[in-house]
Image (cartoon, helix red, strand yellow):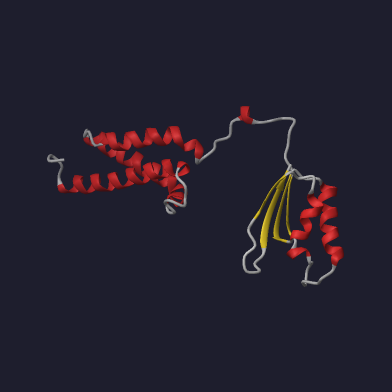
Length: 173
């Protein structure tokens, strides 16, 4: 870096920052958001980070400086890891004969619109789910009374019930 002018040093500093951010964006899918909560946000600007590093790569190539290795290395890393972030269409990935059905429903705590205490409403929700027979059912404002009606779904997740707040539930076959 001794041979770089002040302008080139500033460009190198910006290049290092863009490369570091792209590196973080590439490893974000492998790190829990509980540890670093800002990492998933970098995936939103991933195309801009790749573009910036390509511009820096071209700049250093034009200048014939070895600083191009920084951008080149993170661009290559992004090329091999970006499929976890950006999925491109591949016709070979299509599955012809299978499908999955999802039903999502805001059940208003199984009380109905207007928060009436009509037990018929809970029965109607259960009948709807049984009639539609989806592979996955997602409920917002879920009531535990629905749990008995959904025995055909062996896998389930329900958010914990805290301080009379509404719950969410996911059922799957």
